[in-house]
Image (cartoon, rainbow, N blue to C red; front, side):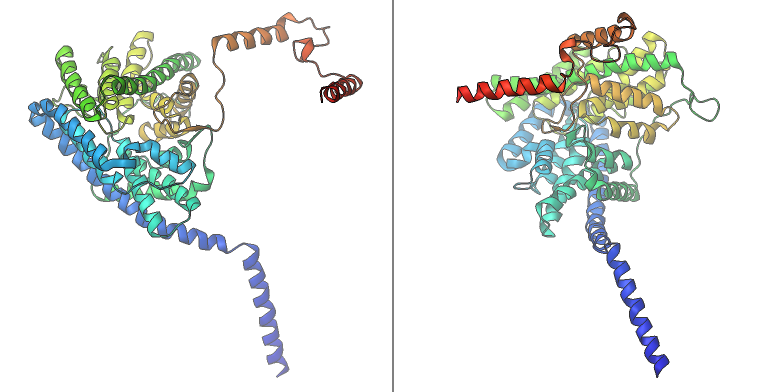
Length: 496
C-alpha cells in the first residue's frame, strides 16, 4: 500500500511537472497555429481553384481573340459595359487593389464579396477584346475578396481579418504566377513601403504555398524563361564591369517605373476631367487602342503579351533572345497599357510591367554590350519591383523564375530601381513605413562635397576631422548648454 501510495504520489508530481512545462511553452500558440491552419487550408484551396479557372479563362480569351481578330472592334463596347457594371453594381468593389490595402491599414466595412466575380469577368472581357492589361490585379482582388468573406463567416475580429487579407493576397499572387515564396513576401511588403508585416508571415507563406499547389493540381502550368548561367566555378563570381552596367540600367528601370505610375494616375485624372461619364471614358479608351493598332501597324502589344498569335510573333520571351532586336517595344507597350488601364479597363499592371522591363533591359543590353538574357530578366523584375515598391519580393521572384546563379545582380537591380522610382507607385493606398534615401541632385551634391571635404580636403591636424564638417553643428559643452537653456527659460517667462 505504501508503494502504491508512493507510486500515485510520484505520478501526481510528474503530472504537475508536465503541466508546468506545458504552461511554460505557452500551449495557446499551438492552439493558435491550428486555428490559422484550419482557416488557411480552405482559403488557399478556394483561391487556388479560382486562380486556375481564371488562368484557363484568360488562355481561352487570348486564343479566341487570335482566331477572331475582328473582336478588337468590340473593345469600346466591352469597356463601356465593364464600366457600367462597376458603376451600377460595383460600389466599394470599384476601389480594387487599393481598397484591399486600405482595409489592411484600417479595417472598416470589409472587402465586398462581389469584387471576386466582377474582377474575374471584367478582366476576361478586357483580354478577349484586346485590352493591354495583366492578371495580378485580378489575383489580388480574388484573394482579398474571398479572404474577407471567409473572415466574416468565421467571425474573426478586425486584427485577424487583416492577417487573413494579407494571406489572401499571398495565395492569389503565388497561384497566378507560380511563385509561392514571392507571393508571400509580396503580401507582407506591399501594404507599407519599407516595412514587412511579420505577424502574417506564417499564414501568408502557408496560403501562398497551398494556393500555388492547388492551382497546379488543376493542371495549370506557368511560363518560365531561360537565362544563361554566368557562374563558372559552381558558385557566384562577381564581374565588376557587368555589375556597374547593371546599376546603370537599373537607374533607367526605376525612372521608367516612376514614369509609368505617374502616367497611369495623371491620365486617369485627365480623362475624368475631360469626359464626365465613366462608361464613356472606357468607350473612348477602346477607340484609342484601336487607333494605336493602326498607327503602329501591329497587334503585338494587345492582351497580356506572354503568347503571340504567330510562332515568330513578338511576346515576352522574345526579349531573352540575343538575336532579336526590339528597341522601341517597351515604349509601345507602355503607351498601350497606360491607355487601357487609365480609361477603366480591368486587369493588372504587373505582366505589362514584366513586358516593359524585359524589353527595356534587352534594348539597354544591346546598346552597352551586356548579356541580353540577363538584362531582360533584371528588367523583368526590377521595373515591377520599383513600380510596386516591393524590391525584396522581386529579388525572390528572380530566383524562382530564373534560378539563383545571378541573385547578386537581381538584388542590385531591384534595389537600385526601387530607390530611383521615388514614392510613386501603382498602388496609391500604400503608406510609407521607412523613407527611401533622398536622391535629389542637390542633396547628392551636398553629401558628396561633405564626404570629399572630410576625407581629402581637411588637413590631418584639423580637430574636426572624422567629425561633422560645419563647426556650428558641434555639440556645445555642458556649461554653454545650461546657460542657453536658462536664457531660453527667462525669455519664455517674460513672454508669458
